[in-house]
Length: 241
Image (cartoon, rainbow, N blue to C red; front, top):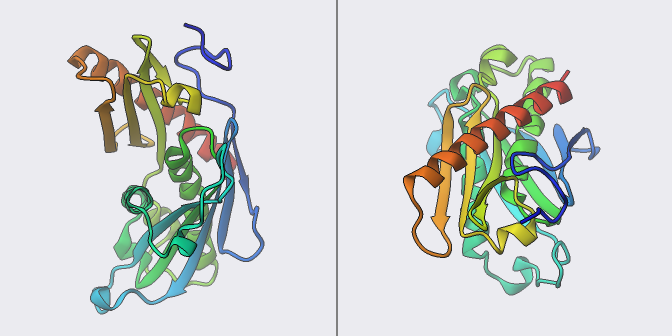
């Protein structure tokens, strides 16, 4: 079965990272995975949450949201509903955990960075695009702190590893990398892989949407995910030059 956009099974969509997309935040990136577009901003505040004060450690957290018409049909804003949905909470936590894996919080000092990831247009893989773009926005925010001599360590010590993420899945018995929406909804197995630039795992989320799946498919998906994250790490590296 051919992919909707004609890609090879192991091929990423075109990926673009546009730094400085927003004027006000200390770091901002518009990340595009094909037709999926996410604006990632990094906002720096001096100090840390009350429960972390006096520890000498910094803090990095994230919030994720989708614009009402980011998808085919309009969704009400969660602020209007008066309740944040479970999916939104889950993705926000995933982004925060993933990005904390890239930071030495002691070298950050008692500074906080909030990563806001807002989906402008969704075509599958919004959470993985958000993680990949938020890393670059976070890096720029740390540089901003370094320029003001507000770090407890050197910038390269604070950002001691890169982090990227990509979706993988089984469609029609075939393992595929970086699923668009049409593939995502048809996947028999759906998985998100978060890796460091050296190929270590930060987090793996996977499920058999249409039943169980064998170890051989799991291995194939992990191999695809690691290879995809390696490509994304190189795209991040070039964007930060």
